Image (tube, rainbow, N blue to C red; front, side, top):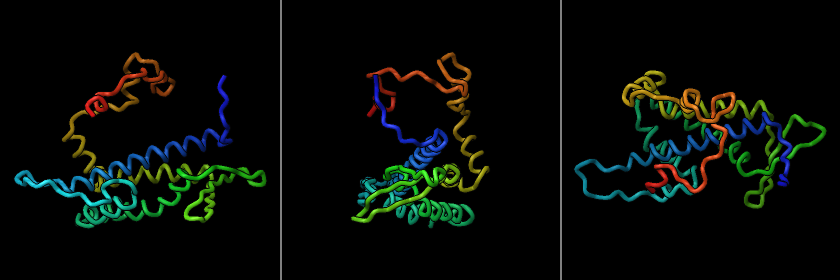
Length: 204
């Protein structure tokens, strides 16, 4: 019999927190890859570029600043403005994301709608307050940012990407048309086989 500690967060709150983590992880990954691509040498160069220490990816804030300098600012016109807007939005949301990622959740009976995180940073105790509605709005906003940094030209860029990369089948649709075990939403429910690796992992 397993004994689990109960966070006392509602399923709705946990769903939104999970969505925030997924969206933010995708955001950091895309920012890193776009920044890394700016250091690629041209095809005629034999020199191996030296990456700055920020590209060790120990702190996302350092990579984000590089992305702004090397990707967002150099891009002119409407697309450049969109990327710089995303940069400012990311900076605004980062403290809330850090509170969610690194804080201890708790609540008070006098106001059960409000949930809080407490964390310690540089000998300072920081308390952040959230509601389920705020968490949902934050997850949605990060999703918008993820779209904006990938497709700053909007649907035109998305269409161009789809044309260049050919057909695409989403994970949800793939599970709906296959016979694998899934839930009512069409997603798999069984655990992955133990001791196996994906093709990407197997290749290092």
